[in-house]
Length: 330
Image 1: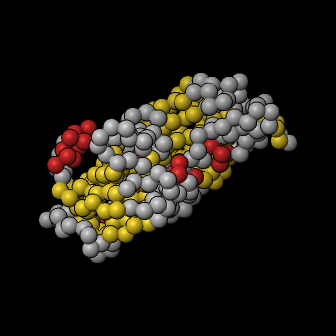
Image 2: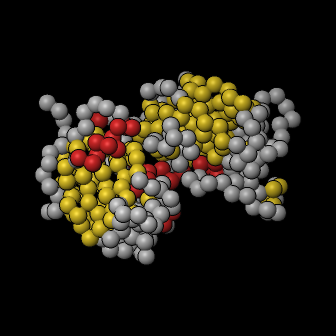
Image 3: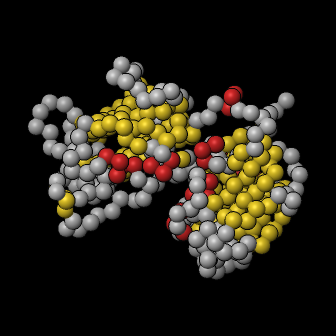
């Protein structure tokens, strides 16, 4: 994945509830395969009633004027920062080009009269390749219309961005997970993510397996591993949950959390600053394959915007939750 997009959430992930609500044609391969979170796979010699089994969306060869499209309802509304149109394993059957339109329809699915806005003009595609395109648009969207010209197959459509939430309607007394990806939390940097991506630990729900968490390689040098996460909104933390689900022979021995209210600067500068942040959660022992909840152990350091989870010395964490109330600056 491009470094530009890895800090954002894949809004087109079926695990967030994203699904296709209509498609012009998916004769060879069902359109919702294109929205799966796993990397596409090739199954040698596997055929079904309609032809070669392909891991993605594939329409028939078009024998008349027009093109194919799919309307996709995002599981969570979001601001799009970039897209990845992945044609993995589609070599003689990929579309020559594709485009994306979007709309904001929070009260239901759009009808035929809805005004769609082009967010990605038609771009050329190649076979068995990833096509990464940045999108500079701060408007939130609820639905996408993915067009392929004129037909063919796409393995994965990944739409990276920030989940949108109308914070003006938020109850200030409500406690919520302030680093959850669905609340705008972002994993910014880490020491290592050899076996599992850092962004997994702020995903919704509990992990489905070890690959659905953050796991580092075995450390053979002094020190410890860490990950830095930006809260979706500044807040004061009252409860922390560290979940080592599925990690049995490879969970960290202990963990601690540092935190700060960061004003200004860039994401790239965060790593160095984090060395000097205050202790939000002093070092705590961890066990395998379980949730660890900490409340009384948390230090009262006031509102924060960023945290650094330190794990000692290495290993895997499935999910991290930081519950608290949104801090409204005076």
